[in-house]
Image (cartoon, rainbow, N blue to C red; front, side, top):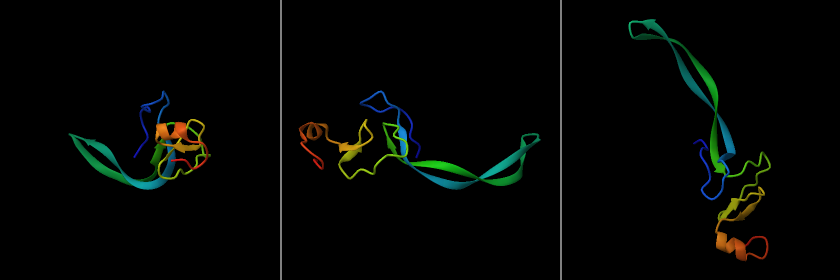
Length: 94
């Protein structure tokens, strides 16, 4: 998975919230002519997989939010349900 695009309710771009590095084999081919290719070598490359995405680029200071919470523009967990968020009077509402 890769984080791409924009976020529906803001003008922010989608950013990775957490990543995992993975080694992947890649085959290098050499064109030998007449529409033919020859195997040259196999290389291992490190790729970055985005395991979760966020609308805000909070760097490495992003908390892991509990179920029912999302990361807000201040890079802190907030209630995912906007109406409940507006009526909340303290931590842990939702």
